[in-house]
Amino acid sequence: MKKQLKAKLEERSEQFVQKRKIDDEKIIKKQKSLRKRKAEIVKVMATGRIISREQMDDQDLIYYNVHLKYFIHQGGHFYLEEEVEMRKASYFKGAIFEDVEVPVIYPEATEDRIIKKEHSKDHRASFYYDRLNAVRYAERWWNSYNPAYKKFDVDCTNYISQCLHAGGAPMRGYPNRSKGWWHQNRNWSYSWAVANSLKSHLQTSTAGLKAREVKDPMQLKLGDVICYDFQGDGRFDHNTIVTGKDAAGMPLVNAHTYNSRMRYWAYEDSSAYTPNIKYKMFTIIDDA
Image: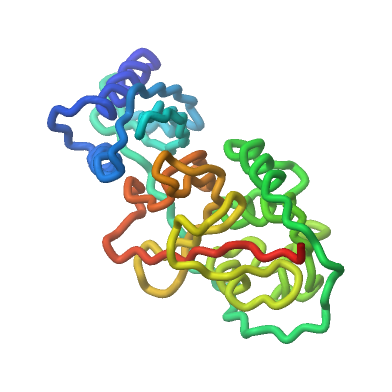
């Protein structure tokens, strides 16, 4: 069974760089996105790790992670993009008959609140946003979890908040979960861990962690934040942090949930992507 899984990983790696007709929607999306950027995958490396196994009569279900590394060439430059897929392989009488990516289910966050613009007197001392430290933290923890914080099943916003705090963004609002942006005593504000709430906080905050919305992704700097509404229904599902730029000056981002590093910002190759996707892009404002 492990030999079959290894062979499947090798086949999947080859498909990303080959130009023959393929049926995997994600690979098709990634190749299309790369062509638009005048980039190409030179090499792909894939390693797998089995997470769990279920047995039902003659059928085995294997849940496993695939760590993909894409060596990308664009405009005379090379860079390494990484992501971790969660996949499910179904075996029947020892043979694979299905191998699919497990989609992320972004929850309807019942604890989310619409955050009205705050006119807070809770002003903190001026702070300098250390973008390099934020990126260092994003790189250190992109595919693991800092035990100092709670790990969420949908962990994207928690991870981005940790990166922002590592860059020096000050917490405020404790213990009111609907106020400010904070994590303390194994508790947290909605804006710390809920994607839509962080987006709302960045739009409205006038103290502590503040941001300015921009329309052009090329205006974003390292340590800035991009928010994603995959369905285009007004509720934002996902957040990423800018950790690099490609050869054209466009942002590359790190993220959690489906852990990724140096991924192209538009997420056109994501299984969550839809033609209705909307983005909000924020550059962090400090007091320097």
